[in-house]
Image: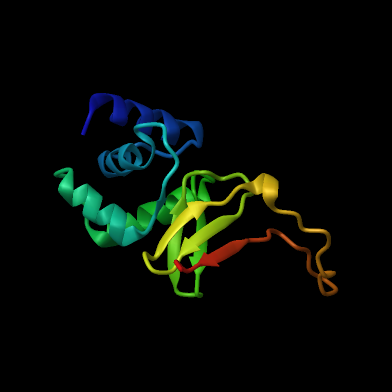
Length: 138
């Protein structure tokens, strides 16, 4: 893994006040080291860390991604109520889910128009709206 990737990962962690342990820096470098946004599963990030020669357990990857979510560094996108993807782009934006590849990508936000939402039940407020558009190749 490049020194620049580790530097970018360390800066990313510092921006949210996350303690930069060796394992967190290694995972952060894989997520944001090249400055590109990512949609990863815990299993995919674990495989990438193994390929990069980092000794990080799958449980540590899950715990680290949870800590990154709690710090606002990534957002969790759940597909089918069971498969979670972690997105390094944290602004509100829609996603395409490519069913044949089980892959999540950003969808063009400027083309999405939500005219209204149902009222939240009494005692509740809408905290977020996730838009996942499922695609199947023809």
